[in-house]
Image (tube, rainbow, N blue to C red):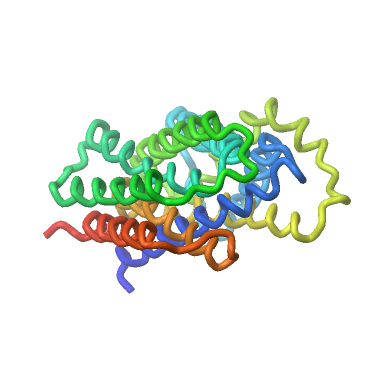
Length: 294
């Protein structure tokens, strides 16, 4: 498998985990752990895992002057981004979260053009537009469950902020990836993130009654910490090292598709013509954007 295809596979795998996470993480909050405490737990767990991995992979040292950009990336990607996502998810539905995530490529397309001078070809514009149109079909014409969503409007606003922050994070970190190993970068970001989130998440994390959490709650928490936090950042940044930010985030358009499949399999949703059509449109957009320019 070529390095380009391996990077695409990494981005797809990360997207799959994200899509499953919308439902898996939703069940945990606030029943077993409050949102901000969950953010703190995610960051601490990921920091530990990335430090362990770094001992076996990289020995490079980061220059002091680059910590300014690392701090900025951390504020965007491990602080505002995570709080907005987890708090937003706790207020709205998992399907809404999957649908709103499809707006991330639009932010990245604009930011890449402004800051990275990325060439915006007509094919990319058509591909991203198709993906966005497919997502809109799902939003407007598809069925939408509102179970366990106390404030969908505010939750959706927070998820929009999450999309903007995640897109900005990919732009900020792109240049750093040319200088340092991605594991080394992320371990420092999560370490800094622990202290940034501490004033907001410490009390909620300390109030968790671990002995009262059943196995169903524990495996979900482990999935979010290890899968959604550690592996998705590992896979996405690996993909970003070899692909443009636009190509990496285009897979966000596949999150609603995966979320629907998961819901159908678990008998929490049904497949209809609208969903089939939107899936075809979204996949067409992904195909156009991920094709190499000749």
